[in-house]
Structures are given as structure tokens and as C-alpha cells.
Image 1 (cartoon, helix red, strand yellow):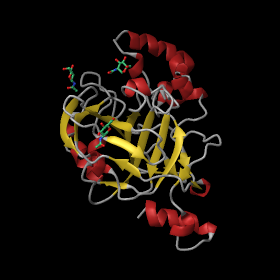
Image 2 (spheres, protein in one colour):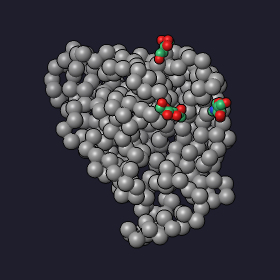
Image 3 (cartoon, rainbow, N blue to C red):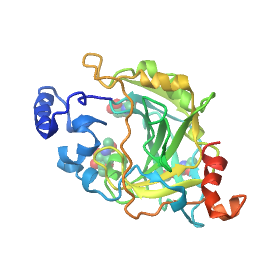
Image 4 (spheres, rainbow, N blue to C red):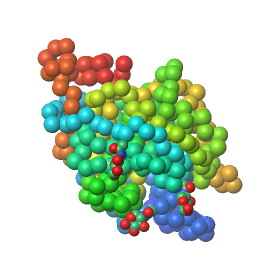
Length: 318
Ligand SMILES: *[C@@H]1O[C@H](CO)[C@@H](O)[C@H](O)[C@H]1NC(C)=O
Ligand SMILES: *[C@@H]1O[C@H](CO)[C@@H](O)[C@H](O)[C@H]1NC(C)=O
Ligand SMILES: *[C@@H]1O[C@H](CO)[C@@H](O)[C@H](O)[C@H]1NC(C)=O
């Protein structure tokens, strides 16, 4: 949280802080935060290469409004390969990230189907979470924020060589989003991460994880919502197809407490706890949000006012 928010310095503060920052070797990539004067409202101003963060009109995350979903019968089931991968779990100072280690992973995990026209290759997982239970997710459902969100990123391996090559190219990226709800028993794959938190207390720390079952993170549902948007961190490239699964996975209170003990800075210059690392929701600007949930067939009634309840009770909040 609060890197600089305790003192609001205004726009001049940005320049002062740039000078302060430049006394230490900090790359542009690191120089943004989730609040204060380097927070989301300023991302597009502090680096010209990030101008889409302020000017873009196909940005993410968004608030998903159940009454605006469009049923699309052409949407296919989402497919993820089930084999396990090795990778590295890191505290990046902005969040918790698991990145696949290509040296140790014989077979890529492909992500196909759903709304996708291309084959995507699993690349990394981002974890966003709140310091309180009523905030934390990036996407919202009917204004409701979940305590955490996990985003599984892949790059278009039909067209591009790797993630960094794909991230600013057409149809470059897929993000499969899982919304987390507090429960008594956690998702089994999530424990691979939460059991390692003591190794990644400070920014820059990382630890290896073997045999991570990506597919086991997913909730048991074939239902999802999908729209075209952006990455939710600078440079906010508008290259991401989002797929939000319509059922939460579970995280325990203890696991959330563990995440909230992580720190944004390094051991020498600690900058406060790591958390509340979500970008505010962005306007849809008339983009459609499609779904493969056929309310007419799958709901118990056809009454339109009931759709919202059906959606939550039957799928999202059970
Ligand atoms: C993968 O192998 C390359 C070349 O040997 C090495 O430079 C790199 O650090 C390795 N990556 C990881 C994550 O171990
Ligand atoms: C994943 O895609 C690659 C091509 O990118 C292919 O060689 C491989 O067989 C696919 N894996 C599975 C399990 O289908
Ligand atoms: C990604 O692919 C591009 C284009 O082929 C290449 O220039 C670059 O070195 C690759 N980057 C990594 C990290 O492998």
C-alpha cells in the first residue's frame, strides 16, 4: 500500500520524486504504484510509453454487469492442458507472480477454445488481493469486489515467439481470471503458493515451485464471461482477451493473512505491506461482454428480473 500517499505532493511532487528515485538505480518498469502520485490515475502521464493507461478506451479491469451480458452460442468450452509445470514464485513489489520456468518444463500448457481463435501458451500467474476482505479483486461483478483475483496469462504461440513479443501485438495475450472467495478449505493448487510465502516476504525475493498443477486452480464450471481489454498494469496494452470464470475458488482467512504480511520493498527499504494491488475498474465504452451461460435454458425461470439472482446463487456465490 501507501508508498507515498501519506503526503500528497501534487504534480510537482512527481518531479521531485523522480529526482529522488533517480538517486537509486530504479528502472521505469518498477516506477509505478497502486496509490498516491504514481498510482493508476497517473500511469499514463509518468511514462509516454504508457499513454494507453490514460487514453485507452478498451481498458481492464471492468465491472461485469449481469444484465448486460450477451449470450453467444458460438463460444466454445475453454481448454487448458492438464500437465504440471515448474516455475518461480516472486514478490515483484507490485504483486505475487508465478512465472513458468521454460528450462524445467518439457511441455507447454496450452490454453485453447473459449472465445479464442488461436492457441495460447501459459506463461505466468498474477495474484491481486486486498488488505481487507471487501476489496482486492480487479474485476467486479455487479459492483461486488472479491478479496482476491488470480489471473492466468498466456501468449499467442501461433503468431508470436514469447510473451514479451506478444504483449503489444494483435491478439497477443489471453488472461483467464479467477475470483477468490473466503472459505474454510482452500483450492488445492493455491496452497502451492501460500505455503511458500515466507520465502518471498520482500520485493525481489523468489522461490522455485515444481510440479505446479495449473489446471487445478480452475473452479469446476464451464461457464465464463469474456471481453476484449488490456493488461491491468503499465503499459496497459490493449491486446488481452479476458475470460472470467463464473464461479469463485476459495482461499482461507489464514492464507489471506499470510499474503498481507508480504512487504512491497526490499528488506533494507521496506515500503509498507504488499496488498490492495488492484487497478480500479475502467469504463466498457460500449464493448460487449459475452457469455456462454444461456439463462433461458439453464435458469429455473424465464423471468428477466430473476436472471441476476440465478447468476449469483447458481454460479458465482454458492
Ligand atoms: C534458464 O536457462 C538459462 C540459460 O541456461 C538461464 O540463463 C536462466 O537463468 C534459466 N532460467 C531460470 C528461471 O532458471
Ligand atoms: C501444445 O501446443 C504445442 C504447439 O504450440 C504442441 O506441440 C503440443 O503438442 C500441445 N500440447 C498438447 C498437450 O496438446
Ligand atoms: C522474444 O521473441 C523476440 C522475437 O523473436 C526475440 O527478439 C526476443 O529475444 C525474445 N525474448 C525472450 C525473452 O526470449
